[in-house]
Length: 611
Image 1 (cartoon, rainbow, N blue to C red):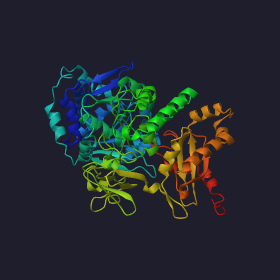
Image 2 (tube, one colour):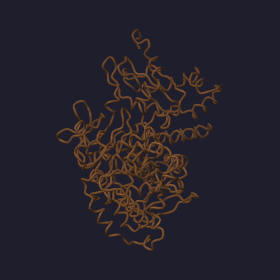
Image 3 (cartoon, rainbow, N blue to C red):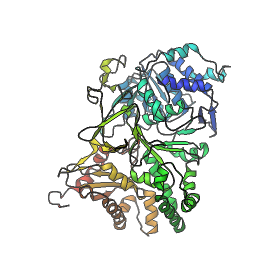
Image 4 (cartoon, helix red, strand yellow):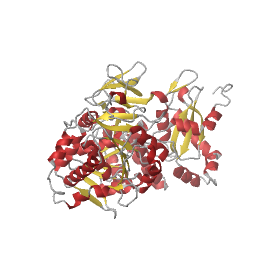
């Protein structure tokens, strides 16, 4: 078991490991190059020295606006080493979303990845407290300092690739205490405006100590860092991996993940549910390319269904039929992940039992975990030795859980956040009592209200059913949890995304964003012509097909939960178009505003409708 007290202990674990492959990064030619632990140490030391020279002191805020890359990690560790509080910002946000976060946090330094990120901020710099902007890309830009210049001396120093250390720097980093603030993370705001979550070194470190304790990871393992490091899930994961001497490879864009998987061949994959859903859809689309492929694929899944409980338990079925299906189908799916993965882990949003079952039927066990930004983040996780599909696992040893009378999950422990950053306080030391507001979320006994509805089974496994604020209450007083219904709909290849609506109405309805590549293939097979997507989603045969999908899902629901009406929308929901958060969860407020007219149509005759 790990015994980290601060995140600087993670950095020292890297420095002390003397490994040749602490990080893997792509060079300009696309080739993967290793960074040794000594190289990482020297670059962190150099960036920390630059921050100190600019007058950045303990408690000052340093923002990072970048895709996943080695410079992100170095800027992070350098900030933490001198006691600064870093502020990660999603690189996909627009300028009008980023500037208020910079102003609110009072960040004095901003690290950006590219010219495009710099140009988002440069025109609005006067609206912030920024004194320095550092560009990670090597090109010179007026008004920005180059990351490469900050570390230039480390490239020529004779001790760069040796274990020689800077005792003064090490001593300064070791002075940071568990109670010191490490980061200010603005939540993605699925239902409201972003809040600034304050996490201390101790909050995150004590969570890292336990989150991967039962996985047996070591220096022979590798993992791809592709989930946004601006999200606590990805950042915590990288800390936990480094603490276990696992090699981390940085992938800056999701569309590069397939090539990165086959190049790196990682042993651990951690992804949000939407990634697994997309992989499932691609596999189903490829299987649908011919009648022979479709027949073989469906036979393999039926065979796998009989053995999925063994897969969930981490065992290899011994039946001849399963072995044949594995050779013909399952291994090809695993090869798409690189062919070496020991653990597939899902977090960031509910996985959905149907998705877990499908992958188990295809020979792949997904271990689901759960947490929140405010909990550093892991609350519970399924492990190799204790996995129950549909649950999010057992709570970590240092986290207490209990269920309130209304079904809300309450948690308590050392990983629970310090409080929320008060927007009114943008100057002075961030660790002053005036900057922290946690009274609305943490009671006098230290219990944090998660906002999630759940239950704990007799064996100690935690199940999360929905967000409390997202529960729909019909006009008849029935509560409907939309997420499980949406997950059932998304299990069909033709459904890209879905949002169940109907709060304070007689019945539930659904907005469905089709999986257009799959739908267009389906229309060709059925000789359906449509000149554009608007015509396509209103075609009678297309509507009939989606009604059949809904009927199938409705058959698994209580009568009051069933979808009575639906609308196909001619849009693909995405982060860029605003319907999804950076962690790929639905932004319900955006969706209900965008489709207010369609939702109104669902209930236009509600006063007379008996449905």
